[in-house]
Length: 312
Image 1 (tube, rainbow, N blue to C red):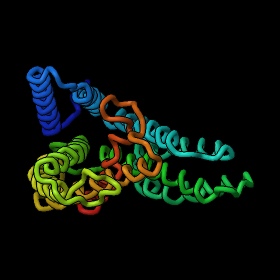
Image 2 (image 1 turned 180 degrees about the vertical axis):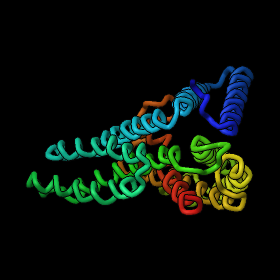
Image 3 (image 1 turned 90 degrees about the vertical axis):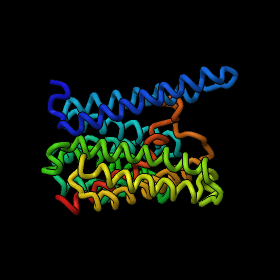
Image 4 (image 1 turned 90 degrees about the horizontal axis):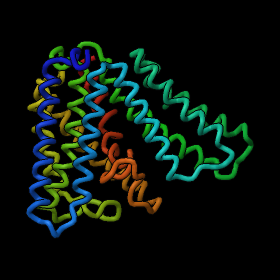
């Protein structure tokens, strides 16, 4: 039965997230009502998009680990497709690009089988070797390094990094009252909350820019304020949703906050290099999949290996 297999604490966490979203929706309506002359279209789009994102995520989480793995495999597919649509690839590499897509079901098969050894080396080792090997057989040397590097980067970011979220669902043991769902919710919530915290602190106190050429709105005050907020929140939630102790949770919060910042600015650098504002328009108010997943590209593998090292 749907949601019946979700551990109790994870159910409560899901209810709390829905409550936060309801509160945000009410605030959005109040702001729009009190300021009828202002255009809040993007705010409404963002709020509605969050409802769809949360609904889909919770639906697949409620269907179990297999459905969740398929869900994130599809997210990787969309992210890879989006990435390859904004970067240039050589006509000669069409078959190589097809091989990059084939890596998605293979990588997530290792996740479904909980085959950690193959999961951790398949893309960084075997696909890393396969891509230039397949390219060289075409005999096209012009632009070879750029083409190989682009495909390597694309698969590492959109498939390898994202697949770590799905693997959290099949880790053995852990917090029996929250399960793998608790780990996924913990990671996703803190990563998104980190984006909001850094933005809020930056708006309130931001004076000193960190890397103005990459992201002019990022400030030291916003970064440090978000870092402190997420570190404290992560420590408080860790014993409830994860196998981490409170002290380990503080460390996890630091990793997620710092990692989320760098994931954000790395994708910002990509967009600035390509001279685009958003990676796509799939999610109204948010841009594309990569615009919404940018922080997770860093936080997912960093958090996964932190937890795996300590408890698995």
